[in-house]
Image 1: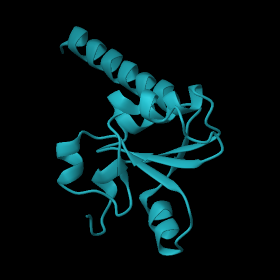
Image 2: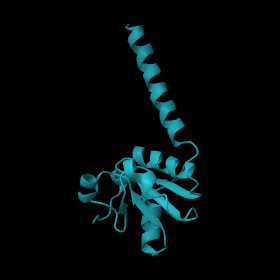
Image 3: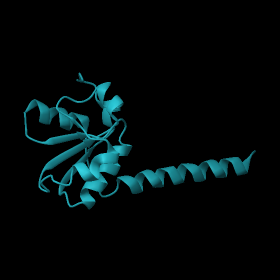
Image 4: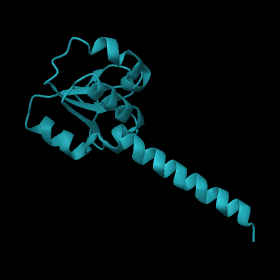
Length: 125
């Protein structure tokens, strides 16, 4: 039996799991079903897609505004801090980072769309 390999594999799994937990902690999460329900009821909210323009152009949630993660700090500086903001990306990594940045900037109502566009089963624009 190759014990060093299995020990190394276990360490990698624990490390990746811890990294994911640490990144997601302190951030509110909503499902794509929650976002669809908000869209269906025409509730007013701000949906920010932090993917790059090419990804956004390939398909995005109706009503989402494209604002790549790299431009988020300067573009969001003038927004109301009480604005209800949902952040989406391709799979959930960049949107969690974006949500954390917005929260650090003083935005109170920020949530990550869990799983991102990968979990969005409905039509896109």
